[in-house]
Image 1: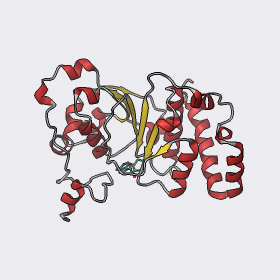
Image 2: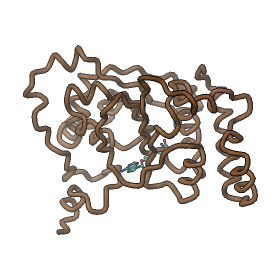
Image 3: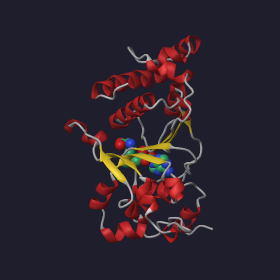
Length: 263
Ligand SMILES: C[S@@+](CC[C@H](N)C(=O)[O-])C[C@H]1O[C@@H](n2cnc3c(N)ncnc32)[C@H](O)[C@@H]1O
């Protein structure tokens, strides 16, 4: 499938209808269950159902953090539409796409499950190790989520499995005071020089949705250039001096305990 803005719009309408129906009609839910999930395909789509039957040798898996509340936020709805298109385009099984946002409502989690995605129940704070090639979809997320993700995968082996679609690291660098970037988000600060970024084109009226979004990869030539000491024992981020931490921490996370002083 070719990704076009028209495709994204079709999916946005589809998700919107689905969301509304899930909220208002129990009868519709029952009818849907009788018909099966394939009835959820947007009109004209022929790939989504086939995708479920394919088992490609080396597929990507996908992790989506910070999508936002797509029942109330148009930007999140567009981003969900783009995610579904990306999964389709890359032939990633819907169930191999793990989604988490503490902002999801009960109904939104149900919608995501009905779509076939896997909703994570634990707040990982972005600290997920990529054990196979993984597309991380983090649209307009807080810097701490990116920084945690980089920390968890801070090795040649780890970063070479990571592909991020999210905020441009160069954009983050430009917008952040250098001293604070190095102190609080040291992994982003270092990753800027290691990664390859391709900025995605964005229609001017969609800046809030897809602006500053890049495809970020870590070419092996950049990773292998560095000495072993660069990678050894990377310290876990703590964010002790961050006044505007844009991440929801786990209730009992060590970082939060340190931040609040609770024992
Ligand atoms: C700036 S909003 C972006 C929302 C949406 N993607 C958009 O562009 O409008 C950041 C999102 O990150 C989510 N978030 C915060 N902490 C998170 C965590 N630990 N794991 C996943 N998502 C998190 C927030 O709930 C919020 O929805």
